[in-house]
Structure formats: C-alpha cells, structure tokens
Image: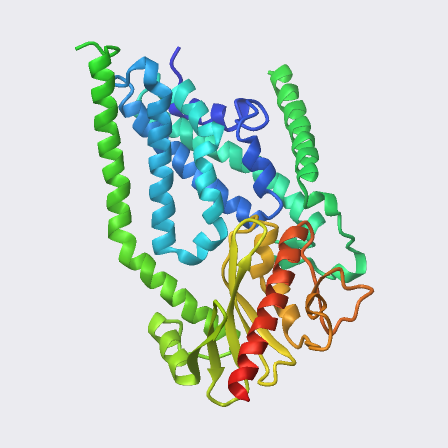
Length: 204
Length: 209
C-alpha cells in the first residue's frame, strides 16, 4: 500500500510521533527542555539532519549492502551533523555558543537512525525527505510543549525573558530544572497526547 | 559483483568514507580562516564588554581598534603562571584573563577590578564547556551582573573572598547567587576566581612596589 506525501507527513507528525508513540529521542527531550531557546535550536538541528540524512540514505538504498547498513547510516548522519556544526560555528558563532554542545548530540538521536532504518532504507528519496522532515517536526512539537512548562516553572523566564510581576506570585519549582522534572513532564505530555490520540482513533 | 560479497562491502565502505570524509574535511578547510577570525573577534568583543568600552559599531575591526586604543596589554608572570593583563589607559580599571578547571572542562574568562583590586567591576567568559542549560548559564548577564560592585576583602581567607552560593544569609558584598542545578560549576568557578585573584594580587603588587 503506498501513501501520499500528505499522508506520510501527517502520519509521522502525529500518528507515529517519534516521542510519544515510538518513544524515540528521549535523551535530548530530557536534556534540553529546561530552556525553550535551547530546545528550539536543538529542534532545528534535528529537523534538518533527519530530513537530509533520510534523503541521502534513500538515494543510496539500492547500493548499500544489508550487513553494513547501520554503519553506513551512522556514517552519513555523523557527517551531516559535523558539517552542520562547522557551518553554524563559522557563519553564526553566537548561535553556536548556545547550541554547540547539542549539535554533536544529534548524531546519537535515535529518531534519525530509526527513520533511516524503518523508512528511508525502503522508500523513495522524496517521500523519505518528507518523512524525515515530519518526524523532526513531530519531535519538536513535544519538546516545545515540555519546555514551555519547564522553563517558566523552573527559572521564572520564558525564552530568557523574566515573567511579568514575578516577585509577586512566582515560586521556583527546582525540580523542573533537574532531570526528574523532565521525566515527569515527558510522562504527563505523553499521557495526554496518547489519550487524545486514542480518543480520536476510536471516533474514526 | 554481488552487493553482499566481501569485496563489494569493503569497496563500498572505502568509497563512502572517502566521499563523506572529503566532504567534512572540505567544509572544515574552507571555514578554517573564518573560525580563527571569529575566535579573535569574540575575544575582543568580550574584552570590550568587560571594560564597558563603546566601539562605534559592531564590526570586528571596531572592537579590536577600541580595545587597542583604550587598554594596554601586559604579561605578568608568577611562578609557572602567566597572566594576560589589560589595564585602562585612564587608570581606572585593571583586568586579567583567568583560567581554571570547571565541572567538565576548562573555564576561561576575564575579570575587571578597580586599580586597588578591592572591587570587582565586571566579569565575562571567553570559553567554557559546562552543562548546557545549567552550568553553561554562567555566561548569562543575570549571573555575571551580580559581580558588578562585589567587594574583595583581602584579609579574609582565600576561599572566602568571593562566595558563589545561596546568598540569603550571607554578606551580600562578596556573595553571588549560584545557578540552580549547577552547584558543581558554581563551586568550581568560586575556587578558580579566588585562587587566580590571590596569585594575580601577589604578582601585581610585586610590579607596583
């Protein structure tokens, strides 16, 4: 059964969301979501790398020997991530100061390997590009929601700006700054997303 | 040749490594001069900010010219420690580059003081590799601005001259609030600043006397 590009896009975005459905990319979800700005930069990096890696792996899919396909995928992903890192460092050094440590972590993000192995290795380049792009967007949506809760509660800021009249009402939730807070928020967001997702599937 | 045969696998990997290795190397080679220039530009910019200098615009050359016009650069040696010392030509400020081991890796920055070394004017960071979102936040203005006006009492033990901790029940004249969730970075930075200040003071007094 072949799917249209539109169907592939929305499937990767929601039905097969990499974070709350496939439970992929959890490490970076926990690590970067204490600050919204860091989250956004990480999301851009993942979207770009997932889409491009899926595209190239799909282009080479008929030439890659089966027994070394994962090594090949990691090599391609790592190469793209390194090139992105060097280019950002050269062309946007101030942005690189924020996201530099995260860019290298993209290599280990299992969403990229997961989509390469599950989709790009078996499908045509254009739809693989769409699938990679949509998976990155789906990952970003969940991370942004978590960061929008963790940063205000943990630091009293939103995108680095202090919350209004903070001294009158705000109390710090230190746990939101720490990894346990990330675990709790990820679990809560996953719970809501799956409950809503199941409800809409039942209605259909 | 079959796709799963050993010669094909080896040949394919060699070709792939050459192609992608060449791509990454090319990008690095092409951007290498830009990276060096960026590093130098960033250093001048940070020094300008630390000394509250006002270049006419944000061009790289403007920062460099402003630093060279407004500050003098000297080298102070104390034992096997070398200090890069910047001093305002108006005689109102003196600063030096400090280095030390943070929680994960080296932290490098510049601290600017009054000429009698009793007050901190400013602090900025040149490089650090602390935990993003936690220790790395030492670069943010909300943290560095706390150092402005900090008093250094040289009669206190070395480890108590600058405190980076919870300041609620401490003397706020020499205390800076640590970053929540970055205790180890805060403790490491406190040790770096106190030990570097002590060494610098000994070297600075020697040349001033």
